[in-house]
Image 1 (tube, rainbow, N blue to C red):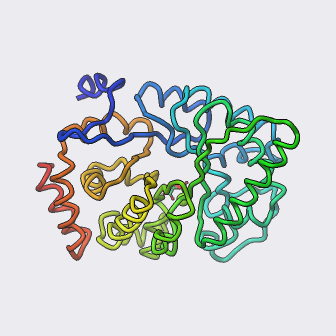
Image 2 (tube, rainbow, N blue to C red; image 1 turned 90 degrees about the horizontal axis):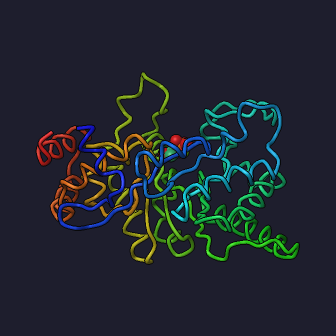
Length: 323
Ligand code: PEP
Ligand code: MG
């Protein structure tokens, strides 16, 4: 099987009925690029920038950040690179920010909520990103968006920073897509309105599942409720994809679900445009997709949306793809 996968490193991802989808990789640092190249990913679907801020005693400077973003953009040689702005909080703490202890960190002051309040910190990152934008195909993504107002405020800050840079004579790409993570149910429900304003969506199922099912993704006692194939999740995913396509936009997925062999047939059938996963999952996913017919998976997904439970969905998928 390994030998079969290796042959696909330089191939495009095409289904058995000739439909192309994009297979991208998730990274945490520029050092992860080697794995991305060795596994033939067609882009970076999620660059988790919080690792730049973690394991140290102070914030990374603008130049430090710029060097990392530039290294990733150059390393990908014009292929798309989706950089997610700081997603700190929840399970990822930054002790040097001295934030007060919270009862429910996963429902608290984190990610874009923090960045929109601590705008000095946020603007340093946005400056570094915009300065790096001329070195490749940068797309900027905001995490944990729960309202349109948050998205508008984040975008306004980005445009403000861009204007400042232009005034300083710094060149900035004019071609940067601006998108959001869909990982909070309110945003999935409002996807039709978001789709008019964002350039793309990336569904973060790790959080979307925990927030939809109200089941902590780290708590083993409730892990039985962490159900990726529950029709409730599939219906939200469908709403997001359909809303984006109606506005001529695209939807990716960068949660664990995107690389899962039970989920892949369903996501293909729901019309997902980009699948972003750990680099080591890219070749197995490409191999699986090559054997699937998108038309057939559309019917399978349609059937799944009408089922009642996670288990029922697993069973029809296994049946359909002989697992
Ligand atoms: C997600 O929530 O699905 C996601 C990709 O983000 P993270 O795992 O970093 O929270
Ligand atoms: Mg998340």
